[in-house]
Image 1 (tube, one colour):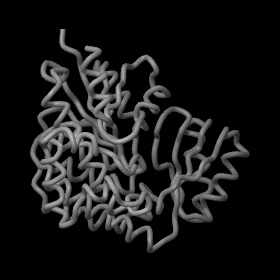
Image 2 (image 1 turned 180 degrees about the horizontal axis):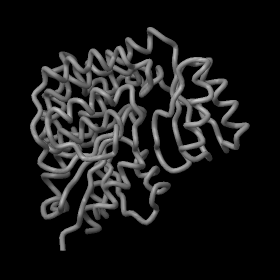
Image 3 (image 1 turned 90 degrees about the vertical axis):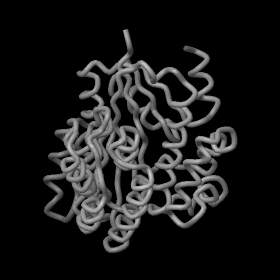
Length: 314
């Protein structure tokens, strides 16, 4: 019986200098992905990923295309040289930015269009960050409802909301810096085990991203989408999206709506998906899976060595 396999793609924050370099060096399929992206962007994305400073790579407008391109390069090699996906029933999901990679994997969004879109998305988000000082804080040890209640109480002081439902007991909140400080203090009073500020430029997935969402919506309208060849779970409601119009609407809403990640994973698990591959830089999604459902099998592929280990063990 074929396994039901889900491909998971990481989002912003997973970038590191050198990501994808071993794939680029060893596989022409990866080289072609990076080279096509450089043509679209008008700058050398291999230089950005392999040899620029971490500070340069961390810029929102830079890391978003870099992560997408690295993830797609790894996916192309995985598809070409492994038989693990050939007979599997597939689905895909991605965390925030990673949702674009999921659509590329399904054929609903052309790779070159995705590169252009996520670069513009990063620019629009950076503009929104520069307009209003915001941030994000990970609240650990409180359930979703308690975090939502705290945010409702603190919203009288300004913008603050639940932004990422990463795993049960881990919710990232987003908003204006001063309000986040007050909200973090209240979360500790209410029993949060840890409150950890994230190293991000601004208040992603909050109302402070509304201007970016409006600009992105116009770009999405101009971009052709197709029905996906495999089921794709959208961040905004943790349900499948299949029609081009609903895909565009969900991606536009995503910028100022919470990412329902653990709910998205549960959607896949309830549908019988029992083998997960995290494809792209880092191991963030594998770490979250251990908290969402430790019984699930997940393997991350961000180096050639990791891919070889997976292929040799099957």
